[in-house]
Every structure is written in C-alpha cells, then in structure tokens.
Image 1 (spheres, rainbow, N blue to C red):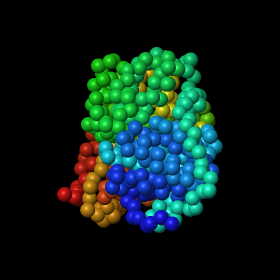
Image 2: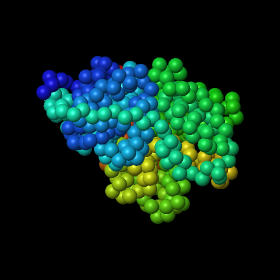
Image 3: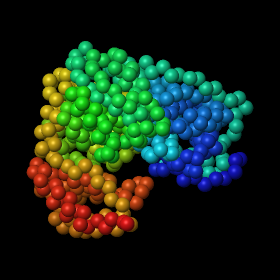
Image 4: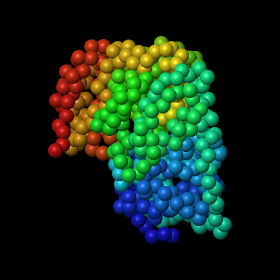
Length: 455
C-alpha cells in the first residue's frame, strides 16, 4: 500500500491540472500502476504532446505501467488521435496520451482509452482509477517488470489517413497551416511529402514554451496570426489546430473563420455519398442545419449528449459512419469511432478539388440559411438557478423542449441551447435562426437579459 493522497486532477472525462501542484510524477506513476490493476491489461500505448512537463510525466507513467508487469509501446511526441490509432492498430489493452490540449501553460493532463480505443471516463473506469490512486491501492508490484518499446515511426498512421481521399485527384490547392507550435507540425510535414498540395506552414515546430501563445483557435485573439498569414500568401484555405490536434479549425480564402457547426453538415454530406443511408451523430447545441443536410443527403440524423465519451458510445451503438460536434470534434467509424483533426481537412480539400468550389462557396448557403451565434460563455454565481430562470421565461412559448444536454428550446424561427459546464461555473449558450441573421442580436439580447454575470 502507498500512502493515501488527495487529488484534484481527475475530471469527468480525463485528467488535467496544474503541474506540479495538481499533477506530478508521483501521481503519474500511481496512475500507471492503477491503470494496469483496473484493466488487468498486458500492454499499453503511451504518447505525449510538446508541453515541457510531458516527458517526465510520461516517464513516470510508463514506470508505473511496467512496475505493474505490463509492457509499453512508447510512440513519443504525437497528437491524441495517434494514441487512438496506435491502441487499435497494435491491438493493445489501452492507451494514454499525456496532454493538456488547449489549456494554459503550466497545465498538463492525460486522456485514457481501453482496448479498441474505447474512452475511459468517470463511469467506465476513471473513477475507479482515481480511488486506487488516492487510497494507494495500486495493485501488486510485478515480480517480472514489463518492457518499454519505442515505436516512433508514423508510417502506418499516415497511410491510414491517406485512405480517406484519392490523392491523385487532389488539385494543387494552396493551404496555410498553423499548428500553433503544437504537436501537428511533424504529421503535416509527413503528409505534405505525399500530397500534391502547396503548403505555407507557420508555427510548425512543436514548442512547449508557446512563443506564439497557447494553441487554442477557439479564442478569437489567437486567430489573427493565422488570418494574416493566409491573406499575405494568397492561400485557398487556412487550417489551425489546438495543441494535441484533435480539433481542426478552418478559414476561407478571405480569412474568415468558419464555425465548426457548418463543417459537421458538410462532412456528413460527403460521407453519406460514400455510405448511403448511414446514420450521423450530432450534438444538441446547434442542430437545424445538420439535420437538414443529413436528411437531404439520405442519411439519418441521431442526437447525442455533448462530449466525446457520449458521441463515441452512441456511434458504436448506431454503427454511425460519422459524428460531429460544433466544437470542431469530428469522429469517424473507420478511425475506431474516434475524433481526428487531420481527416476533416483532407476530406474538405478533396471536395474542393472535386467540385472546383472554394470553401466559402461550400458553406455560404448553409451559413445564410441557419446563422448562429457560436458558443458564448458566461461566468455565473449559480448555473442551475440561471438555467431555471431562462427555462421559466421561454418555455410557455416554446414549440419543443429537449433536455438531452442542458435545455434546448425551439420556436418557429429560432432555437437555443443553454447548459452548464462540467468543470467550471460557466453557462454556455448557443442560438441559431432560420435565415435573417439580423435577428440574432435581438434574440441574444433577450436571452442575455436573464443572465446575471458573476463579478
């Protein structure tokens, strides 16, 4: 038995916290031991992002796994999706990615999966691992320790990504790619060598010092560098990623940021051409455009609660070919039902090549038909009370009320979803309308008048 400790780094779907106060090498070692004890596994994949704290955390985690008698395939610096791929590719018992994704500097964390890259979240093993870590009940130290084997070659992963497109049919599009000094750069260089595209790469070297700011393109202030480089180089499309590149963000040739919502319908349409009649999973925050595009393409739209663990579980249940969230997470059946930040832009580049259309031409009609606010966050004193207040005000007029995730209400010409964050005292609001984007500001004002922002 190890001495009991208290942890703050275990969240609903993953592990993350400040280093070393909330996550450190002792906790990482305990997680390694506990993971093996809980899953009773024999072999695990471990990968890490570019954060300065990632190598020592990975070393401690792997020592914990091998002390428990299991083997490790160390895939080194990578993105989260590479751990998903490797876990299924090598047919191991689980995988761990050391990453804090888009969190500020000084944070780190872990994303855990079991066999077949199935997510490990609170009710599927993460809470049990936390209890072992905190109680010090890490399982028996093995008489024969496991071994660590390095597997840094990305060829199998790159080969798989290229199966989603006809490389020979791609046009020489000029693409601005901004990994934000995250982990995407090395993968982009390998793909660039095998694709007939023109590339302008900026901030492509992984650097945990984050000389250009933490890679998080959801923050409007982080998009300007990407936009300026795109315009200066006359590119056909711009791409940016968060640190572990499980999310991909798009800019059109005019430097306009394209909300992830409109990519969901576009990708669904493309995949339904290849897999007619298939099911498409979507989250409940913004839905009208996705449902319409899926149904027009002959597919079946299925709503799931927001969050990767819920989306992946529902995709497996429905055998859905694709799942998309407005937050720029895109999931693919052929990618072990996992999210990828590389497959989406490959598919969009293929569609632009096939149709001869610009990215703006591919999405403008949908943006005009269903304008949206994007997700707006409010820090409030009492999330539940604010939710109840909004519901009481609007429910008498609502045509439909849905509680899949938070509260969604639909009216004749608009709908909204409001929900609480799982980890912070934040209220998250999304509004969409049927045409007439000028009504969005008025609708937003109506909802915001009921929200008391905390000082």
